[in-house]
Image (cartoon, rainbow, N blue to C red; front, top):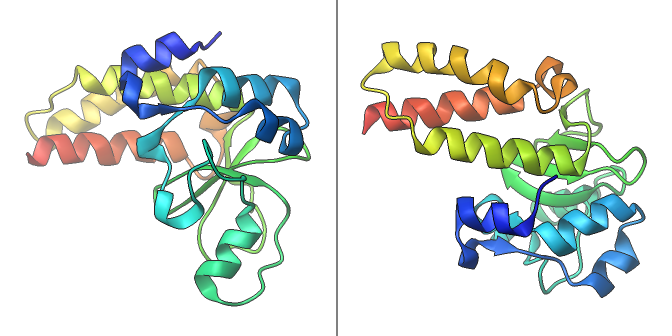
Length: 184
């Protein structure tokens, strides 16, 4: 089970945001999801404050309202709540099934873009990826492939359906991170 202490140990005390309980009660129906957002928290670097505000102080926003703001046209998407941004899109918690999905600008539906099967597994996967990548220093591009092949099975154990998703969010995130490290 993920805890605030584990997140702080990985990301630092100043970098983990938690949602106020009153806000979570108002917008999040799942008790398990409320616990993650109010007690465990999410790292700030995975939340783009310019796009959707600071969920530790502001009301949460939906993917439809954000894309409508960005594109200046009405976007008809569900009421999935944005919990993070990255990889050129938004990470959203579904109020319908409790899964975490990825949307890119212009999406009008989920398109099978599963990131994780629960918010807790999203946070656990995020934590594990961060901890594992912190210790890796690929020397060049040939190291990247080897390291990625070693990481995927280990991280994939947290939430196998997420690693079978066609979007391959975590695999791509790890690949881009490793490539970035190799180029430095």
